Length: 448
Image 1 (cartoon, rainbow, N blue to C red):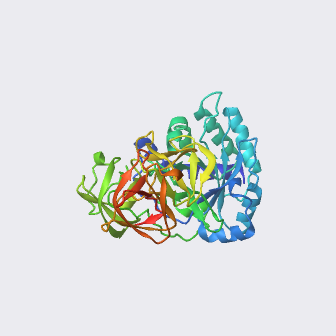
Image 2 (cartoon, one colour; image 1 turned 90 degrees about the vertical axis):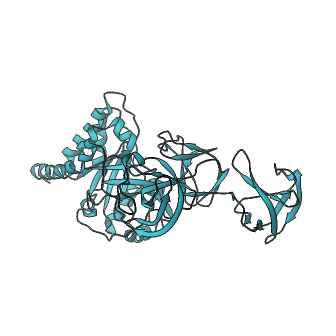
Image 3 (cartoon, rainbow, N blue to C red; image 1 turned 180 degrees about the vertical axis):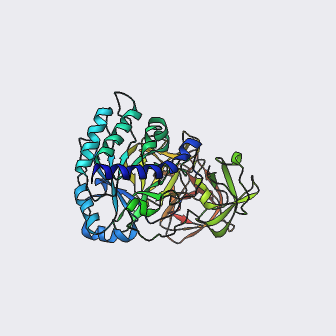
């Protein structure tokens, strides 16, 4: 590619990017997020992919973003294999550099190494800037140096990635030079301008047999063809979590603009927690439920809220693979995960920004998003005041339920009469039988 051609292309891209980044200066993006096929980001953590996996992956993704390196000093073990397979099977892909540079000079070197190592079939290149290793100069200067060096090497689109809070703190000026913003926020829709939103760290792909980070393209900013250089894939409409129940707690997003009846939601009523008073099925936009918020006297769409477990519940059953973090902001992964189906004990705590909740376990912090997990104990009695055992259980004469306090066993399928359900300080529950003994209220052991 000639220098003149490269600069002409970059000027065109800059014009497109400028319109997309107006929201950065003016305080946010008002367009709604579009649903697409999966857009996973993949690294050596997903292993060395096979031809069969990638062939099957093609029908499940719009495009893939693959890690090439972890700074200059470490090349992703399977980047060459995986990107070659994407190219072979016609999957559009970009590559990203997990930044570890310490200065503007080392940022330039890191960019050069990244480009030289990359698969030149990549449609775009991304800087993953989510930790501050800069010890000389400013972070904005280092990010700008990375961008400038990459711009001198390629005419392809350059993407900036980070968590929302990190992006605005450490690269708020330098990131505006990039062609698009790829923003991670697992709690709610980003409140800064974005073209790609990494909304989860656990989206299951059957072709790979595991979960990956996943993103959604904001197609009103850039269509899928912008990312893939015209290699289009089919769009599959997906819906927001729509299995809410009465009594659950939800956070109304900043971007929630209208109620179900299409009247305006006042800005002062957004970014607050509410309790659901009623639910109804409704298919509208990206929602399959409408939720009645008594405090507002209005119905809202399920896509405009995120639900969280609030208060203490003792233990939780996971519906998904969930990453473990060392901080309650969920920005620093420990490298460990709880697997789908695991029962986890933990304490519910509020996130530092006050806009979401986390669960503190003995290994770190996980999300308290009710779409990802459910409390492990029943917390009420049914009208018949009975429970049926799902497996062999024991009755105890002490609420501590130690082996020494067992007084009777009940086989699977036994119906027991109960008089009350009690809560321990940890949030765990137990039933009181009519004879005064106690049995667990765990979902896995009894049903009501």
